[in-house]
Length: 305
Image (tube, rainbow, N blue to C red; front, side, top):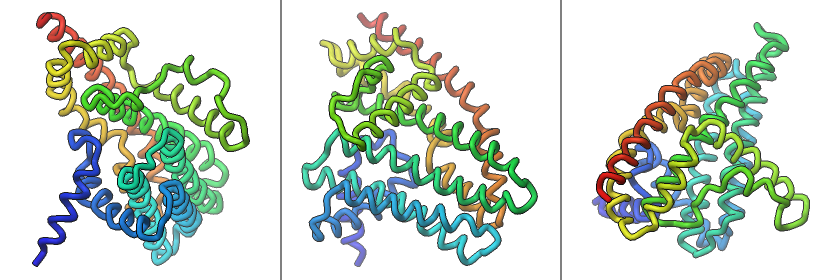
């Protein structure tokens, strides 16, 4: 009776770049739901970038609705639209792979849209609390929460992307060094310039917060694409995969989105702002553990050769 669900779940799973780094919520909800939106978009002859814009629009609507923290009905709609935005964010990548339209520009737009969606939600919630218990003091709190959220997200995305780069050998997933992206943008035009400065800011955040040394990055890259790449990739997966769960829990978008929605349903998005700030302290032991694992991996690789 439900054979089509199993079939479609298998197909949606096949569209995932690397299962080892996927969050459970994404596997069973975002990717699965996004698969149907991708099929619909393909039938409508939409491009991945158009689906990305739809994701942005849904996110902006949710941001507007989060202003009405004292209205439970509108909060439910706000939660619906921010969830829809996340599903469409998954669908654009699936559509790109279905239609062979993947591009570096598309990936950059995809990453930046998520930032704009959360900015809209932060602004909507903060504007509500200006009129209540916090007055204008909510603005620095919201700004700090947004910065730390962005920093944690950048660090998590760094390790997800590095994982794909080393394990799958997908060279266009190589994360550039700061000095490589600080060069003059290759294309002119307003939007390319905006994307350029946003990318520079994002790479700087990654470099500041991810904690992996350049020595290890360069060594991992040599081994991942060297003669003993298979052995290195097996060791990298075994050592790093368990920690990816903690990266997702502390820094992942799903964690932040869930807490944002739950607190807003009670009309207390301010609690979420405090959550985003306070939980940043967990980034430091996570980075420390990651550095320890990097040294452990290098010792194993060097002893094997």
